[in-house]
Length: 129
Image (cartoon, rainbow, N blue to C red; front, side):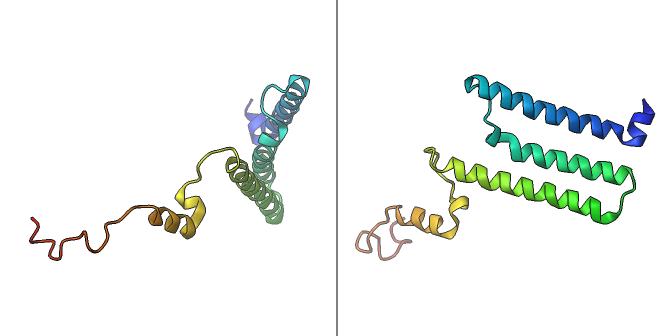
């Protein structure tokens, strides 16, 4: 059992299981539109597999550029996954948060808050207490 971990073969097994899981989910979705669509999990799965490949390369004492390439691919897949999730969430009726809209969203929120006109405010706030 320790040889499985020391040689890195356990990573190969986990990559195979992830690919099998992705294939089964795609097959299940294709049969009756049940379960997640492949587009909903493909980038997430790719990111995880790239991380496992980086681990496998490190266990095999591969050159640093191969490890960096696998980590870069994992980061790119993860970034694309996050970007696609935020793009899909907006049209579905969810209200985006102020942070997702940046400063323009914050300004729009502030503009919608009613404020008292200058004539309604007391001249000396301390005198009204």
